[in-house]
Image (cartoon, rainbow, N blue to C red; front, side):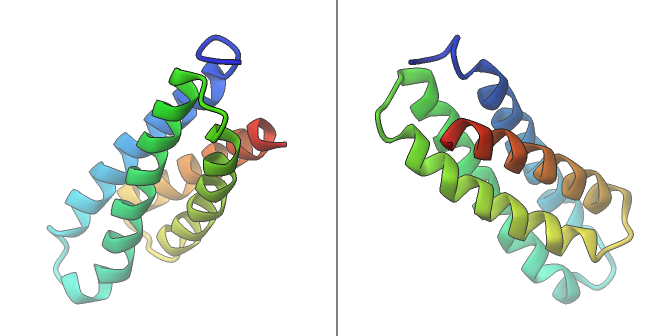
Length: 109
């Protein structure tokens, strides 16, 4: 198993990482940045695990399924936090995190 087998999940992880980075950067520009601290932290963690998951899947690593299971959990947590905020970047992030979590769960099954 490798890149072509897991392409859908790899693409979802890469998109999620990019959107999480965008969300974190956008949150730093919000008026009440302290209120956004949890969101920013989860965005950065989610982006990191999404990138790592995509890398392991691309390499065909036998550890990819384990990391994707963790990725799904973190995407759920990040999406839930982002969903609490009404900014467009947080709402987009919540939606993409949910989609990525679904892909990662399918891949890890």
